[in-house]
Amino acid sequence: MKKISSTLILLAGIVILGSCSKERSPVTAWEYNDTKNGGFEVVPYEEQETGPGLVLVQGGTFTMGRAEQDVTYDWNTIPRRVTVSSFYMDQTEVRNLDYLEYLHWTRRVFGPNFVDVYKKALPDTLVWRDRLAFNEPYVEYYLRHPAYRDYPVVGVNWLQASDFCAWRTDRVNEFILIREGILDHVPTPTENDYFNTDQYMAGKWQGTVVTPIPSIAPEGGDRIVRMEDGIFLPRYRLPTEAEWEFAAYGLIGNTIGERITDRRLYPWNGHGTRNPDEKFLGQMQANYQRSNGDMMGIAGALNDAGDVTTPVYSYWPNDYGLYNMGGNVSEWVMDVYRPLSAEDKSDFRPFRGNVFKTQMTNEEGIVVNDTIRYDADSNIVSIPGQVRWRDVSISVADDNLDERRNYKYSDNINYLDGDIQTQAEGLSGTPFSEKYDPTTATKPESMGMYEYEKTSLINDEARVYKGGSWKDRAYWMVPGTRRFLDQRQATAWIGFRCAMTRVGSPVGLGKK
Image 1 (cartoon, rainbow, N blue to C red):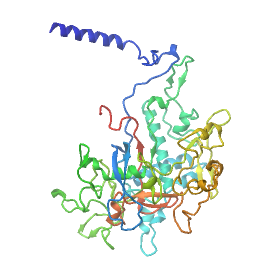
Image 2: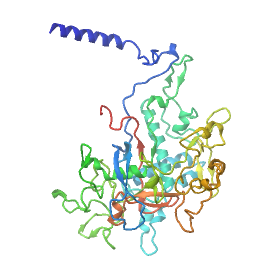
Image 3: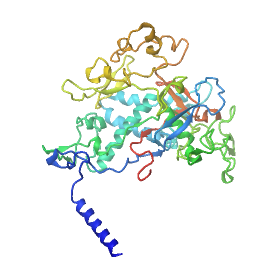
């Protein structure tokens, strides 16, 4: 017993003495965080902070695609086993109140000098109009009246939803830096000093720093927060189609070991749309159109109590804690639509829509600030106070595309399904890189596979939306179904929710 006690005392002494010295590199033996050694910093880090409104969706493998009879005979949901990494997703659809906060901020910052930026963000409230129905009250009240503040925002196209995600990224990261006492809160930001994450990390932000971070580099001074500090959260974004479908099924609730006991048709168990639990027997599991002209049931016994949309916390969440993954509103996802995406996309983190970009720099290598710019149709393509991005190009030596093996050009939307490379390169013998310069504004014409507005409605602006809505039949609540719409169009039945990449462990701190 005495021997054991002596050993414990000795180990305790070693720990105490060891704690007085700095951590050393296991490959060079030099100490970290030492000015004399060059000031290489290694900061303490545990795991990713969960962003506001998000829940962790633990990833895994699942069969993506058709789980119900293909009643449309589009054959665009061929079953395919894929793997999705863990990620975060909004617990609910983005509400009218959330979007109004975004509009309020945009008007305060850009309204005085760049009112077009505010107008660009406005939802299309006229999507409620129907030539043979009286829907004018929704046009006037749905977005702004407090009675609808907890209802999902609609009338937002894919581009606007993506802009909201980018804005949310900056506001959350700004809040984190203010919370940590690094930045000063600016109650009246302008287009010159509002916080932008990319601008800040490029050293171009013009705001006020309250507590600068001292640098331990030999030259001394202060520094900004860097990626290596682990303070910033990854970007908010739209979920990929695979992520949305995986999250909607919530199969984590039907898993024993590595076996899924019951495959789901909807985001809940069973083949019906009513709750089988004795406590809630017969109550509707989602907001959808039951039959012709039946949007919510009979007065005195409304089935889903939703003539149009319902509050975002209505009904029961699935096993990930996500609400309304079936019904209420359909939701935008990141992917560009192709009928045979399941045949072409990767097994791991499948996605179609990659256009590889890099930050634009000047001759001195300094990141270039963006200014308000318009495209040929007078649509805003960029706003002031942000970093300008460009497509990677084979004509830019620093991009090294001629040395790459995994991609050779920036725009890979059409890859293996509609691009000139797979249709014509083998016939002419001319390298694809000589046919297509991604720095130009003109994209190569189709070889006939998708003749937009002639034989097809599919082009590179056709974005996938998933799930059923308040005006859909139950068939569309099956997560494996998919539809598409032009990214510039909006409807009264499509909303969205944001997602965020999970970095590090897929299960969380302390888990295997």
